Image (cartoon, rainbow, N blue to C red; front, side, top):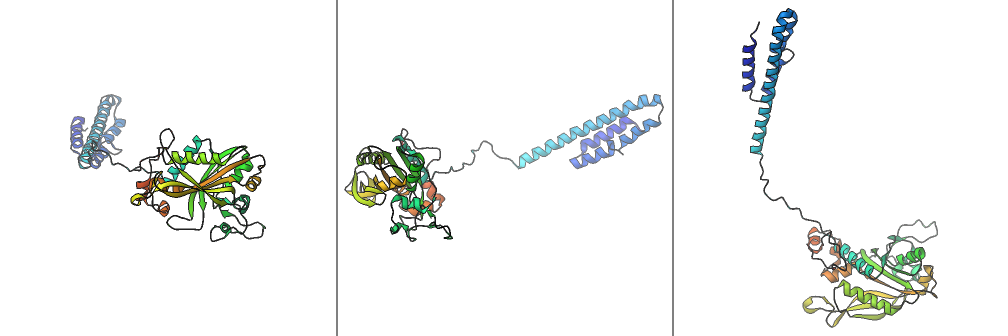
Length: 363
């Protein structure tokens, strides 16, 4: 019968000298595995007398427990050694500052849109919306634009495909936000004060024109609205938007099918040293068109022109951004250049408000 103390000393020595997990596993299998030395000795217990088993059984169980404990401890030691080796080879300085990730910026069009909404919200105007694909009636007829008007030609307007079998003219990509006036009057009635910012489309492309750009439309209808109210509203907007105490506007008689009387509005400016400066100087710069809503437009919106009247105006959001933030080329707004957006963009969480100020420093 094999001496358990000698066997234990031999196995413990082999376990302690195991240099890796694979060697340790071989020792485990050869000692306490199904056909290991300790397991084979324990099988002999069945051939012993009860008296012999009482003596030999506890010895073998204690041997097995000590071998398993030694294997477990050695496995932990090998794992710790492997971890320390890896840490020594794959180290990093956790006290170093992390890599900064450049924050995104808000596009100037989005910034100016928020500014416009904030200003007119302070003047009691709400925001109205409409579809970008419009019917020919909403985009032209309801706005008192005759069939021969140049804006209805294909060289100026994007028409949608039509099979021509339904008897209706094809839809268009809206050429202005004015159709929102008609839709709002028909769905909400009067009185009303709304602005309608959004994308519009025209077949044009140069330094100051793009096929898609942004406008906002303003509409105010009530029983006693006049051109004086229009003038005050536009002056208050320009004063707030350009952040100037004194703003001088010039109204020039003009013609728009959807307003009567109509006017184009210029703002005083200067071009000293090739730099545009709003609010001072001897020059004038056109910024918008406006007028009193034409009675036929009121009728198209379901409003009685004998009882109600009001004014409307429209401005280009992209143009306002160019004027306020010194952006020279409208086409760059849509080129998707990251460097351009980083230069002219705005902090995304810095929402403009009247009480906090509208201007923000680009990143």
